[in-house]
Length: 502
Ligand SMILES: Nc1ncnc2c1ncn2[C@@H]1O[C@H](COP(=O)(O)OP(=O)(O)OP(=O)(O)O)[C@@H](O)[C@H]1O
Ligand SMILES: [Mg+2]
Image (cartoon, rainbow, N blue to C red; front, side, top):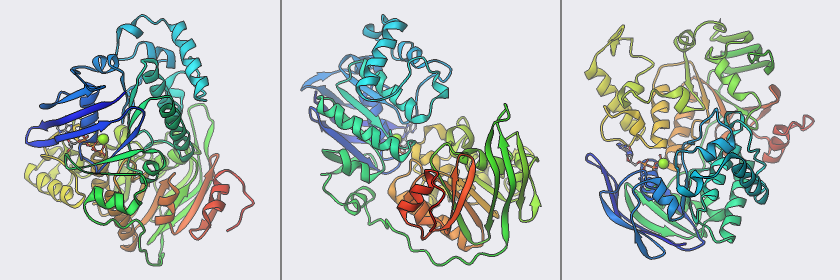
């Protein structure tokens, strides 16, 4: 099925999110859309899927004009979507989510649970998805949750599948599996619109690429284009894909984790007797396959994990077992893995979110009284510096694009005078230009004498930033190696092969 968008324009107040965008997706092609954070990609896709109405413009399917007022209209003409933020109900099973989903149509509205189960099992088998229809969604890893979204779209017989940053939260292996599924769907005649910030993925699967900048189509490209060419076209200037970093000069210990064990409610050890030190002026990366205790280790440093033993010293003072605000006030900046859950208060404005950490301190306010003009000018400074694309600092943070939300967290946490920066997946969802900026900023933090503890599942990021690499596997740090280790040796360590030595 082919889909054509003609001169789609969408404004939010004075902001033109989509400015007369035209795009044609051919039958059975994988069409990638590249663009900076806030360029208007999700907005355009939400229009195609009927979640937003354009101010003007036309959509046609197989060269016939269609009206899409709601997702049910999109599904009826064969357009399905997997969102940037999952829309599954966590406490429901896979089958319940698919049957009771938010997008009821006639065809599926009559489907009962047992039919749904059978159909899920069939699709799951066909694509090697390994999805259990009766599993409760919240117990599934994100990679599997994503497959549930894909299965749902396929059950609606989507002939055009919109994937909005499907790989942002996936492990490298899950990503490769998804790319394989995409190629397979394409070979069966499904068209795919694929949004991603990872140029390698675009090169691997796209047939054609459309590049959007500030709401306008600025060009098209073929996957044979180099990453440098794509990045330049997207950002409008050359991007440094490899950083220049001088030798570290580590000073005193700023973060010392001693014999730390973290357990869950039932006493199962998620982090096992960890010892790790981060000194002033160094970046230590914790590398590992997602789900090996990194999340809990990071949260423990902020006193966000209730069941811990051991010690966590910030500049010599033990903070473990005290409050989150004690951890923050002792000089820890925290970029959480999940900005939606821990990083932002979505009903607050952008400026309030930018100063959440300091709102009770002079010069912003005293106790709960804020001084709006100071808050505003500081927020505006941070927005400028981190290139956060927004209309107004008083807009709710929920109106920002995915990548710009992440930048709000980074701008807040990297603007404070701290001793230690704990950053989990800090560049998740960011465009290549913003990644460059954040990486430079983290190196600047290091060079200014801060200690940086980076949690990242992206090996490129680990190698770009780390001075030392701690490898985490099944809750333990199984080795600490210099950043000169080879990629393949690091990969082996991450897989739990202890013998490898750098
Ligand atoms: N409901 C809304 N109200 C106000 N502004 C909005 C709303 N939704 C989107 N915007 C703005 O429209 C612009 C485009 O946002 P969009 O989410 O389409 O970007 P994107 O290209 O998907 O970016 P990212 O790569 O960060 O996901 C942004 O500046 C965003 O702040
Ligand atoms: Mg988006």
